[in-house]
Length: 74
Picture 1: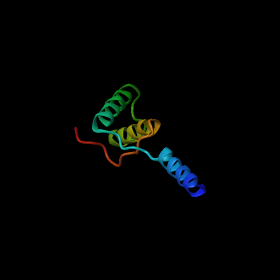
Picture 2: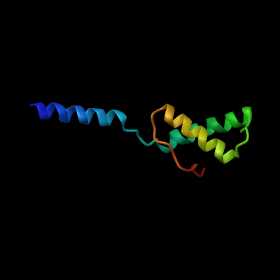
Picture 3: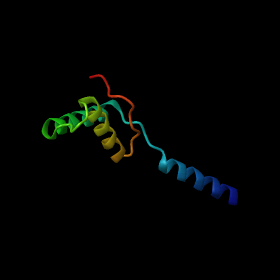
Picture 4: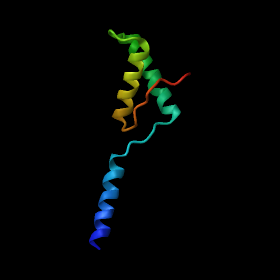
């Protein structure tokens, strides 16, 4: 019985921290939002691609999605 409870707790704790991969539509929406931010506020000292990747990853992280390594081709 004790092993079953411990196994259940381990399973629940690992699934609570697992991040999901965002679907293409979600990433596309976040990318469009980040393009709007860049147009309004600028990119600071970053290139547009670097700014967009950082922005999209911040948005993904705020929604508990895994970060991406490169921007999608649209």
